[in-house]
Image (cartoon, rainbow over all chains, first blue to last red; front, side, top):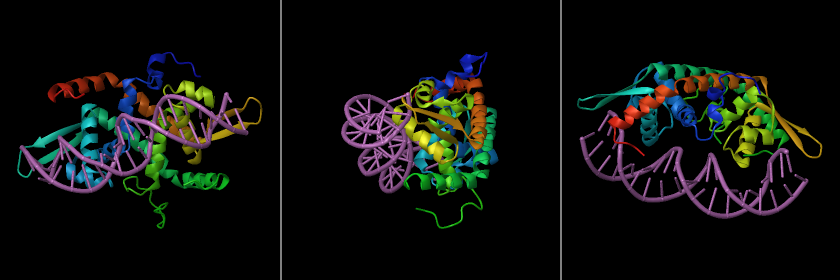
Length: 130
Length: 130
DNA sequence: CCGCATCCGCCATGATACTG
DNA sequence: CAGTATCATGGCGGATGCGG
């Protein structure tokens, strides 16, 4: 493996009980990544976010938002009015993470034709797995 | 089996049925990300990878490797010898993805002190979650 | 309108044992 | 060494109902 002077940082995430692995999961998880990217485009209210991220349930949205807020990725702002209004926006750190994620997603999306081709060939060589 | 429309025209990860969302999950998932980064350092054999990615079970390693191979992220090379020898290495696409992931992980790890601080403050304001 | 709480099914994950 | 098969389970995640 490559020689790295700051080995403690790099080897970190490979350790099973390192907290960075949990944070990474919150950020890259099924809904976390989509929420961060959405908030990278614009600030959103709860309902708007729910509509933007297609398929997410209220429960998961609420839960994921709490995790991301706890990790300091976003800020939740409550306006004490009727009807209630709650807005979410990224922190500076959250914005950096969102940018990285955006790059990753662009990469994946741009190469989806190749991915689908690889999948088709794989399925052809192996026996048509569901 | 939601495959009637042509999804390749516009890959939108925000759409619930878009295959790019699945691929993204394979790549950013709990084990997928770590495996890709490991293979970004060097080629590995099955057992080596198992030892490198701390905490992964044989089952999950095998399964994740198959998913990533199917998506065209890595190549599995079987050497017909005794004892068996199987090597894994990234495709060009896999390498690009691994680089993006590495950037994301570096960002997270470099900011873990801030994250932990945010968590502590969050736990203090809200009632000490388990 | 914004969410939290509860119930519950189901899948991802892990442990173990077995095969080539 | 490199997996596959089987079983058990914890938690993810959806549906619903309530509270502010």
